[in-house]
Amino acid sequence: MPAPKKPVKTHRVAVQKRNLISLPREIREKLKINEGDVLDIKIEGNRIVLEPYKLIPTSQAYFWAETTQNDMLEAKKDVKSGRVREFSNLDEFMQGLEND
Image (tube, rainbow, N blue to C red):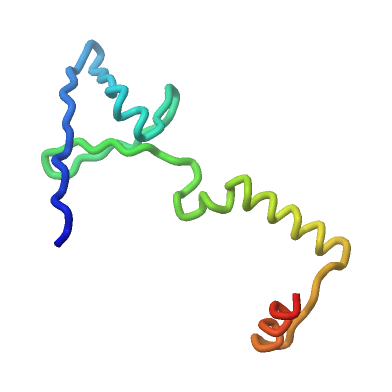
């Protein structure tokens, strides 16, 4: 039996002068929103939805992670130094993995 859903905590904010609102600290910290970050805002029905805008799409974020970038640099060095192998087909490739 699935665990019951936790009720969503809501926060009430007031619209201030010049139509500004302040995001509660709990929300900013949970979503890692900092001063200067950009948010997308849209209307869904009668709701206002704010979402952090990421300059790097989530589907590509792994590529820009430090580990991936280090792996890419290592691979580039391997290619430059000639530490590469070519395989004709998948079976040959799999055999090459087993021999490593």
